[in-house]
Every structure is written in structure tokens, then in C-alpha cells.
Length: 385
View 1 (tube, rainbow, N blue to C red):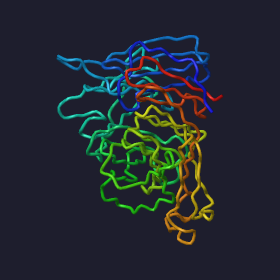
View 2: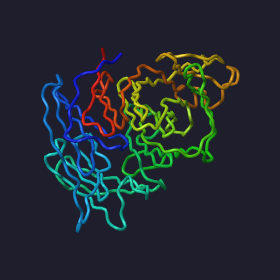
View 3: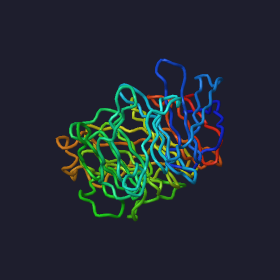
């Protein structure tokens, strides 16, 4: 169970953008940094662990060339690299990179006629070569598998199985691409959007539905749907969609392993605690849910029975194997996959009258998390009771 803690006030409200909250926990210090975007500026707040001390900073979107209008920021996020931490802002006119506290801008990548930053309708992803220190940052590669606007990018947070890739990108049409990084990026798998013909059959070991007030909501084919947020953990891709679903895929093969009707409305944010496999989801329906991901290596324990996980009155997640034990498909053989993927509900929190647009864990174990919402001038914090 989680309980509400002292909230953090912002200088301005949060915009209705996907994943509009970023959290940086400074190692060895009882201090955390939070950021949220509003129009042409981003609010950066440093907060003490006891919630008593705050420090505010506002960063503005850089204007490119002969600017005649204000540039709008689309995202702000801390990128934790092996040798340094950067605060990266994306806008309509380019990409800005700052030192982690926002004090010094170390790089500016302008948008011109022939070049597009991540998140535009071109669907390209830019790969940057960043030195341990200094400003000699360069574009090393351009990835062009997507045909729609990039909505989210996530690196592997756990230990990737061999051949599973270590980066995933998502776009506005719902397509996911899993990449293997190195001297050059290699496409490992491409997961088509809803409604498109899949290159691999749907051999999901669990068909997950929801029972809401005793009325079962069953899965039905839908048209392509935006993937607003994505995470990668231990070779499992967790993707949140505009129809309120969370889907779990094998990163190496693109096979669907589980799906759950997690929210009643559009999912705006996902986050994952790498040390425990906890998954955080937030949506327009004012709810934030905490889930637990795991792999069941005992594939012989599959039974044609419904298993219930109660997590809120009138709301029960159901795992329904679509075959009897004797019909276990070859794709789930222990020799061909590292165990069945399971998702279990742990906690639900209603953020009253709030269209949640940002939700992040504040630590690697998932013992605390923060939430913000559209037109909300504060960040709510929750900790384990």
C-alpha cells in the first residue's frame, strides 16, 4: 500500500503531454529532482527527501534563427549515461542538452528543412555520440524504421537476454521497434500497430481481460492505436496505448505475451522500477496503477483455469490461458523462450479530478512514486505505508 506524502508546488501547471514528468534521484544525496513541461518552459524542482526544502528553476525553449513565434517544448527528461547525466529538452525547433541541474546548456541541435528531431511526423530517431565531458556532441546515426511521429524511447532497465535488444522506440500509430545498440544500431524486431497484419502469430500464453462491476470486458480487434509510452525490462517490452491497454511483448521476437485492459481512458505514462519489476501506469481516467512483472520459468504449470487477482472492489484482472495444458504452443517451450511473462496488480490510486499526464517512480525499487496532471500546478508524491 502507498500513502500520500507532501506535494511539490510548481511555478506553472503541467501541459497535457505524454510522460510529462521526469525524476532524477541523485546518488548519495537525500535529494531528488523533478521536471514538468508547460508551453515554452520546463519547471525543474530540487526537493529534499523530507519534503521540507525546495529549489526551483525554469528553462526556456531555445529559439532557432530568425524566430517569429515562441517554440513549444514537447518533452524534458534526464538521460543517465555511464559517465554523466544530461537534462534533454525537445521542442518544435530542436533539441537542447543541459548539465543535470539545468545550469549550463552544453549542446543545441537545430531543426532545419532536411533534418527532424525525434517526435516529429517524420518518425526518425537521432542517435548522439556524447563524450564523458565537454560539448563535443555529435549525431552519429539516424534510425528510419518508423513512419509516424515518435512518442517514446526506452532503454533496457534490467538484464536483456541474448538477442533481445536493449532499446525500444514507439510511434503515434502504435508501431514498436526493438534495437540492439553498439557501434551501429541493428533492428531486432518490429511490432506492427493494432489492426495491421502481424509478421508473427499471436501466441500469447495469457489472454488478459478485466471484470468491472461483474461485467467482463472482453478483448476485441481494434484499429491502429497510439502507443503513448513504452518500457523495456529483462527482454520484456511493456507498452501503454490510447485505448487503455497495457501489452507485454517479447523483445527478441515481438510475440505478444500478455495484455490487460488497465485503464478506462488514454494511457499517458508508464514507468518501471528495475530492481523489482514494478510497473507504474497513469491515464486520463484519474487513476494510477502499480503492477508487478515477472517471468514464470515453470511452463508445465499452465492450467485451463481462470486465475483472479483482486486489486480493487469490483475490479478483477483475469488470466485466461487460451489452450489446455496439452495444447501448450511450441513458442512457449522453455527451449524457445525464457519463461512466461506474468503481470500482477499491486495497487490503485485515484488522483481525484486529475487528467494524469505524468507518473514516475522515485527510486529503483518502486517504493515511492510521483504524479502530475494536466493544468495541475503541483506534483503529488506517494510512498510505501
